[in-house]
Length: 429
Image (cartoon, rainbow, N blue to C red):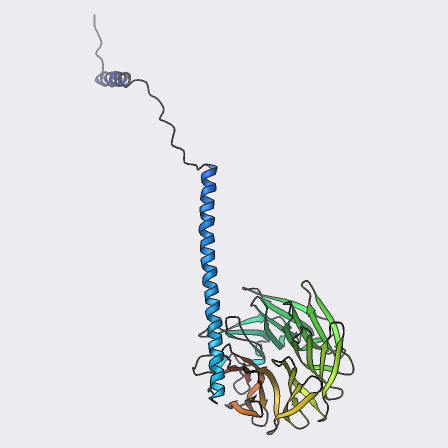
């Protein structure tokens, strides 16, 4: 009987399967691996972790707050020290030199300037860019000036007035020439928010911005259509508009400030009678009075500020005589004085008070085309030239640095630039 031969490959496969079966039986039954260790935290562990993180964050916030308070205290101490130095220099009759810088030279920029200091103590300026037809804002960061566009719609941005909100953000009132409207811009930290305050007729020139004691923006301005002086205040949700004076053509060259009692007050020009006028709100009605009507044609380029004693004071231009004048209320009557009468001086006035409480005025000398500065020493006015390089000094705005030194923004008509002058011993602003 013939037995067929078995292929070697089949024999090899049988051996491998047999060995594998024996090996499996030797290891016993295969069981699945044990369950993995839990990786999720319990609710209590998560809660404990959150509590630890909250404590850490609270500690960091406390540290940050403490550091901010220390920085704020150091800044206040530095400001007081600078003011004391300014007083010492003044008492010693030491006058620091004027340092002049160009802020913006884009061609035809720098008209309608308004100067104010940031809460951090740096100068900031709102102004009109005539070449590009827009409202601009420039701020000094400690080493350089940075300029940005606020409003470029139409022809908005003349008659600017700059002030800082209680929260420290810049805000600007201005006139929209294209639409004949009063507008308001405020910076929210990243962008400018623009709003129309009054659009009835042609309104909004000669604007002046200040913040109420409650922290709301308020604006005095001229209503061109009705030839009236008007006042707008924000109530937290909308603007409330009112007419301050409507007797004749009134309301040009307005300047707004708040009394020590917190009531709005405005200096302005009566163009019908060529007088300087003053209006104050008593809580229910506006009361207007004539400040100066003696010269025949006065009250242009007014600037209002309150003395440390709380009395209103006004710088203005006497066009009849071509003089810079100053009016001070003594509690019952206005006292008028001539500050500078040297050949057609006193337009574009801006009034502020020194740390020692003396009035100071920046203004344009039209006879010599110079920027000038006048300060009262308690008995007489001292007038000096700040910048005389070409035709300079229009659209002045005066403010005092945290250290108590005068600073002025103005327009260089020769170079068509925005400029800034400050008294200090260093070159940078």
